[in-house]
Image (tube, rainbow, N blue to C red):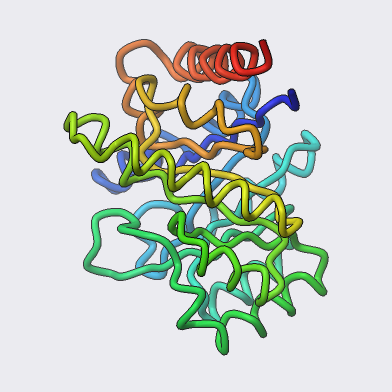
Length: 252
């Protein structure tokens, strides 16, 4: 089975930095450490309110990812400002996400069905600039079809509901995992590359990683939290090992 890539989101290193208004901890240093520990790429979300990652962080991350030959996945809202930043830096990928200033974290997937008229032109301009475009969506077949219709090459399935249900021992966890599997299969059938992310931890990674159509997981908050206790390198290496174990077990 194809090796599953791991993208590490370093947003919350910047959250800690910004809590004191200091220059540390440096998310760019965290990105370099993540790549050294086995991450396949770096993910960073530049929010409109700049609550964690800053414009200067994106400048530096684009440089180090390009220098190391690793992809930068630039998460951003569908706005003219964010599109302009993406076009200026031309990261490997731009993942279009929903964004509300009052939310603590991304609460769900981008509603591509309702937003096609505004999303499609943005996707087209990004693709024409050589940027691989992903839509971060809930595992809903209508959203999968809409992502393909607007020209996205990739979808990233929002795994938050499943992961939360597992942590809270809710009975619907298996049904939510089934929705992820169904959406991944349908996207693959349509020719879309399939990624997943949000809320994944050591307990939930293996069932998600075992979904054969997935090519990449993007994980951030849990890894940064775990790094407080065991270090960023070991946290990433353990996640990588669990992902590989899930793939090898499924292949067997």
